[in-house]
Every structure is written in structure tokens, then in C-alpha cells.
Length: 257
Length: 65
Image (tube, rainbow over all chains, first blue to last red; front, side, top):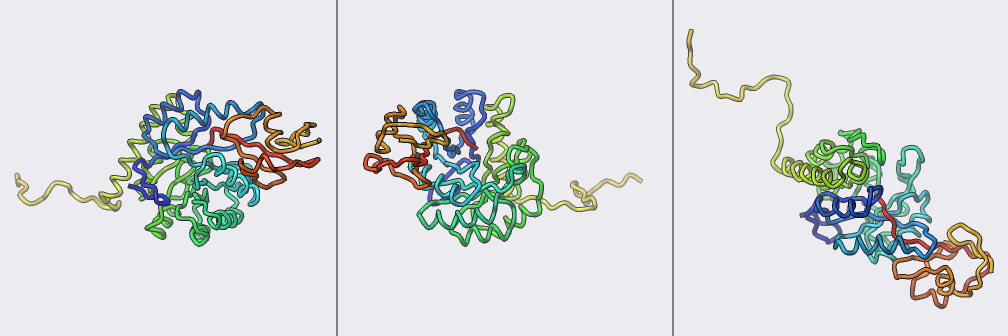
């Protein structure tokens, strides 16, 4: 069981809700993945916002935790205001805090991120910071009051998989008791297995599932591999070695010569 | 009154934020409002007086990752 700001979560797969072929397929993906946490956003919509109302009703009907994000924000004040507006709509203290620093890589502006996190935790928000795999930034986020860290493993939507395993490994070793969720860059189930085997607590996915040929089937595939990776981490894995070790005992071997 | 609503200049005869939302045909309890970069809570919209050239943001839930 994963404890996130006092909420007990069973599923270690968090699902983004963007870019699905249809609301029905999104619903099926949420159901088959057994996710308990979905991310949503806030956007300008004219014409009375009725599309938004239908979307929100659909999410609420699924009975999952809603994790609003500040996607697309580029500065502290913009991110803080968006977080406050998200709290107004979604009535949750949770916020996935994104402060983008680079248009091409969607890399977080970690300086603004830490500052925004400090402001928001001071106002009672429970912040899930989308950050890089930098250890010092992670320490600053913890000092700022974050109780969860969400490092990328590759740029958002890139499907490139873990780009810096040693950084992720260091983060796990350095923060043994902080929930660590890989957010961004996972492309296929084997990528998710790798980070779960490293001991990460959960994986947040969107494009890898929404962009699959059969998103609902892919959601289920990810759910299985995330569970398997977690179980393998708990079970303890062998370290690789250079020389062979016979798996069959040598004692009692017949001698024919 | 000239207002900038979600980045677009519009002329609307509303004096409070609640009246503005009604004039724009917004409905439901799932939207958030800010005026000039400050959140205006839903319970304060009725008393929030608008001024010429106010920048108003009305945000609603949307798919996100």
C-alpha cells in the first residue's frame, strides 16, 4: 500500500486523461488499469464550458482520486494561481506542480518549481512536483514541504524510456522513505518494469497508453508489469556478474572417464 | 464595459463577476475564476465588482497528463 499525503493507494499506476481517441476508450483504460489516481488539467473554454462539465462528470463517476496539474505554466505566479483555481474546481489539496522551463524538452524550471512548491505547501496544498532526476533539486523540494517526488525519466511524451538509470538509482537510495513516482518519458511496459525494479513506488503514464493501438489493453499490460516490477523489487534481485556460476550442483556428478 | 476574458477583449454590460458568467452562458459548479491574476472564490463572485479593462480568466476541467 502506498501512502500519499495520508491517502492509501493500492494501484501503482497513475493515469493521465489526455489524448485518448474517445471518452469511452479513456473510461475503459481507467477501468482496466485499475488505477486509483487520474490527472486532469484546467483550460480556458468559452461557450459555457459544457464540454468541460461532461468530462468532469465522467471522471467523478469513476470514483478515482483526481490529481489536477498545472501543465503548461511557465512561471511561479502562473503555477500558483492555476493551482488555486484547480483547488476551487476539483476540491482537493492535491496538485501536480509543473513549471516548464524549456519549450523543446518540457524540462521543469526547477528554480521556479521549488519556489512555487514552497508557496503552495505553505497554503496547505499537497504538492506532487514534476521534477528532473537531480538529487539536489529533490532535496530542496523536500525542504519546501513536498512529501512526494515525481522525477521524469525522459521528456514528456517522448516514449524514450529511462535515460539516466544511475540518477534514478541514486534518488531511490537517497530518499528511502519518500514516495517516488516516475512521471514522463515511459514508452512501453518494459520501461515501467525497469523503474519499478529499481524500487520506484509508482509510474504516471499518459501518452504511452493513450497513443497505443488499443489503449485499454495497453493500460492493462502496464498494470501487470508495474505489479510484477514492484514484486520483483521486494523479492530481491541478483546483481549481474562477469563469470558463469553453474546453476546445477557439481557434487554427485557422474564421472564417465 | 470593456473586459479581457480569457485573453479576448469583449464589451459586456455586467457589473459583477456572477453577472458576467451568466451573460457568457456559463453554468455548473465546476469552473474557477480569477480577476487580474487573483483567484475569486465562487462564493465571492456575486459581490465582486468589475472594472473597465479587468483581465478575467474562466477555467474549466480538461483532459490532462
